[in-house]
Image (cartoon, rainbow, N blue to C red; front, top):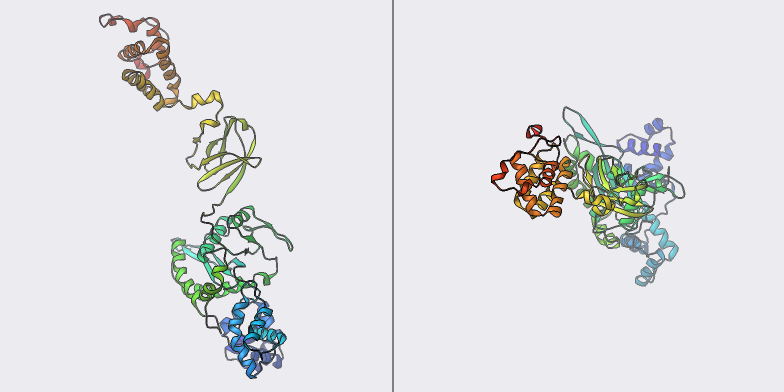
Length: 507
């Protein structure tokens, strides 16, 4: 095939057969035969070079029957474009098409001549696709070997990957630049391709990418779990191409070559700073490519898609797929697990303390599983070194403590009296950290149940006048019943006590 490509390239450049014979060491008769076949195809050198080796092998090595000039054959040849287009539909066979042909042309050819005419027509004028591709059957995907680049400043260029997807029947093509070949970018690009096509094929055929296939096999490859989950979400199947079998994905390889010519060449010398800018430039070029007429035919990829394949595609899932990441973690003694990527902690039911659990998380949610059962669900929070806790996950003895917040203490104090609320606020303010005052606030508020709200209010007024803000001073005032003294008697000094600290201590 390499020599064949050299011969046609040299001949298209005006080189004579004698010189080609000297340059490629191939007999002149063989060279003339190849040139004659190429000329009979009626295609340009660019279309010829876009074909894969397997396609060229069929065209240049399969004996092609001579096209008869008989009137019946001329009529049949005129019907070939419509016959071959119908053959792409599901359930349509050459036999059924022959029956339709005979019904309209009773004096037409038999089944063997009819099938041979189809073969000759496809050899001479077919585009890259194979006749075996049925409408809505497969979508082929691959990454282009040649990368594009973004301008990152200071003359530095950041290379990006180019994803290509093509529907087998209509050859409608989708192209998108992505940051990498990682599974997140692959799945996002596949999802964008499905939404561009407006439907889902029965199968997706990837190359043996690590982001799609965990372990390749000639008979049954092991799929990446995340890519398999994506396929399940959109009710399609994954059929990886066999390793070292280029014919399994020759369609998308041919599409990549066409993309080089129809898109890459148009982007040369145009600077792009972001992927969004690059994809915005690719979009109109892609539409031109899809609306261009096939070589030797009077319809385009887009027209063939709208006529044959759109209705054959399955419905799209209205809910977009979110890539899940997973990690195994152990539930800590405080009933939380740690999401290392965000350095954030999430609660799980306290009964799972010490257990190993599976953590599945997306960009918006965190799910915790134990033995295939989801035991916790949280919205994802990216605040580092913080805890997200659900009260029903805590042990009974811990739930009351979880309610200790400054707002709750002040609210409870206001229900007793505004003076008590002001005193509680000052207790909270006089500690370096609010949690240091939680036990003091809890003890002070409990006095309302033990001695009554009136006495607690008076005790808070006494302690506020003294500038003392802690549990011990309230306890001392209530024990000595100083809160019950009249206004004239409140000049009595409180005796010195080792547990009472002056206000200077809190400065």
